[in-house]
Amino acid sequence: MKTTLRTPVKTDYDAIATWISDEKACSRWAGLSLPFPFIAENLPELLAVEGCTNYCLSDIDNNCVGFGQFWPGKQSAVHIGRIIIAPEARGNGAGRLLCEKLITKARQSTGASTVTLRVYRDNHAARSLYSSLGFFIIESESTDDVLFMSAAANHDA
Image (cartoon, rainbow, N blue to C red):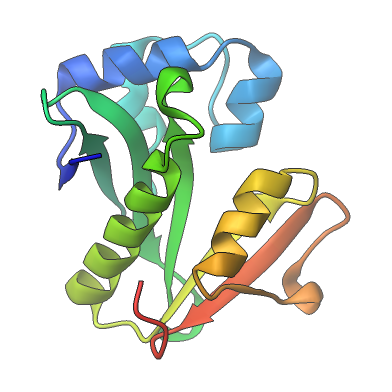
């Protein structure tokens, strides 16, 4: 799959809004701070985190097939989050491509040697992907529902 990581535009947020089907999906993707239902044009403001940068993974036709963010994390790390793949692109490697490109961009942009993320314990597909990308679980930072994971720079994503 030929893809590009780029800055999202209005039509990308319109597409992303269609991928969120209900309140549970919304909170699992973006956390409790994003209300459901929401207005697509408000997503850039609703998803804002101090110092965050938003990216879309676009296909060969420039359609947004994935979205993710990164922002400064704890102890000079960079944190990636709000990763989502278009339903029709799931299971085809788009998630791996998005994560690889987002991790590379996050490290290049911030100079951080460590990348962190959070994932629901029951999201086995995402956990498997993140583990394959060199992330490991830090239980002391995790909760009953959500795992905190970290990857050091010696793993080339």
